Length: 196
Image (cartoon, rainbow, N blue to C red; front, side, top):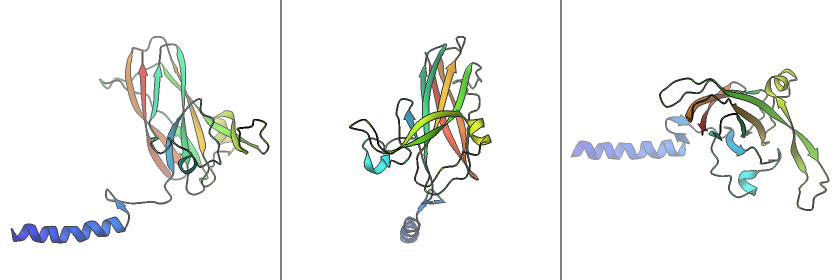
């Protein structure tokens, strides 16, 4: 009984210290960690808009990229990045996906684009805002070649991911992990494709 009381007495201050230090699951909390989230392909999200403080419905967004697709069809989604510090280099890659039996599948073809933004200082629509609007989708390799793959602090950057499902892909759920590189850091991005 005395040992358990001693353990409880010692564990409470350790828990308190780890909470005050910003420790989370053994890792130190990084206030500069980027917000990585997903968006529908149809959402035109401004680069300079703070969606997590100025909009409703964005706080529960996760980084998982989900596709619901039929055979012989294109489907797309966006991976959004909002860094808390300047990012001088970003890239994204997707490996081959596997089904529930662990089999790799051919025929799920991904094209990855970086979104280029254009400033609109005087919008013509009555309900639009001035700001940086998504304008062009540039193939990621070209974006990197031109050295445009940087993100300013507190700006949103879209990576537009287009999936083409070939007609001979069996119906089912396919999963994998994409790799997002931001400077020297790599982040795992869960990917799930449901083929009907």
